[in-house]
Length: 247
Length: 287
Image (tube, rainbow over all chains, first blue to last red; front, side):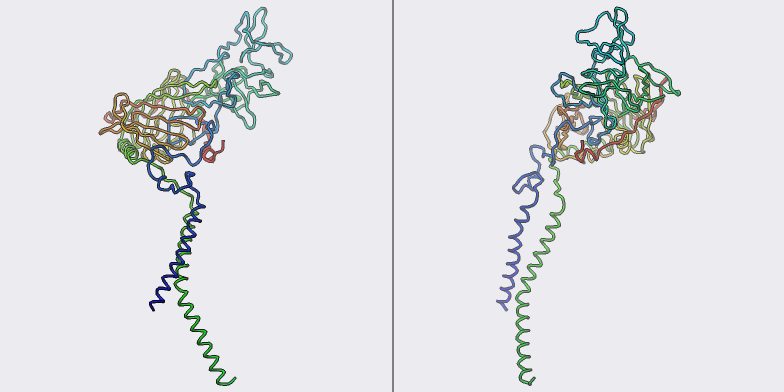
């Protein structure tokens, strides 16, 4: 009887030993959450002097938050966002700067001074001539001129004009698979290594009106008009922007 | 078959049976042991099948201070506070600058909110009266309204997720600031006492992984936040948002008219664009 008991205990022991032998093999295959190879589970739970690393780290410049300043909606990202195109002489050519809609920073551009019909006796250095639909123009960083007697007169950006570089401060706007670049009331698209002024797409929002846009009334509401393009003010991301529309 | 043959067969059967019984008796504990082992392995396998959950590493003191602040704000039926906000901006040239603005905030629980946001070229107000959120652009005299749920928390979520706008200082407005702020936190530490504009505070730092945030909570009987910094490590240049909070007021009553929007003279109503969010796309790492 005694020998039977001893035998039973021995057999149970053999079963458990076999199980214990298997366990390390099984645990060895379990992924460690923090990438450690050792037994780190206790460390992971204990407060540490440095914050734990996130399970996954993505490269920067992927996020286009409309707002900064909150934790609750830190992962809320909106689809409709425009981005400022980098300065043409800037090294960081891949950066499209998405400005927080709340940010109030004055970024004066040369084309902000556009004044339809204004005359100049001379043009700046770097201004270059171009032809559009058989007519001669002069172009200088977002502003177009035509000869008027001995002067040069500021005119609206002509559709079809091709320039080699975008005006400073141009805003990239995605419409379907096409990217428009908006500056000074003109919508450019990339073409053969340059940029051509295209007809304005309807239903897109721009963060600011072209300089000299005129306020009008359309169907009892406020709208703006510039070079035959109509803009309707609306709140986008909580701030006022302007949507192109056909009255 | 003879009688003797029958007896021999019966005797052999008895021997065989006895051997089977003995063998079964001997092996039963081994079977039991193996069975116990199999059950244990099944439990382990089920445990391993679950995704590994990493419990946030939150220092107890950081947790306690944040809870104190949260409880204090949550139990306040109304309050007002001023904030000066400074925010990093990276220009297209690559240069980094800061933009500032001020926020005057009034909250009355459970469903009233007003914020006036001022900067050099912008001046706007946001009203929430339990039924709608109204935006007022004071510079151009435009306003627009959207219907909103009946509670502050739901209204904040609707404003963010449907209309792409975050109401100022919303983390302090929600009904349970602790729960809201800690929902995605992966780590939190207590950095000890620090003075913010002459006010003794406790400095806490938390991380969401790709976004870090810090908060300075006033010591003493009124544990209100005095400073908040959010660092966006997933954006170019890791920009920071800083809010300095002052003039906390839990005494002055806030009547209804503060939260009720009245269109200013000559103002024009414009639409508010509803914008789809791509939260899930971002969470899944889609650009």
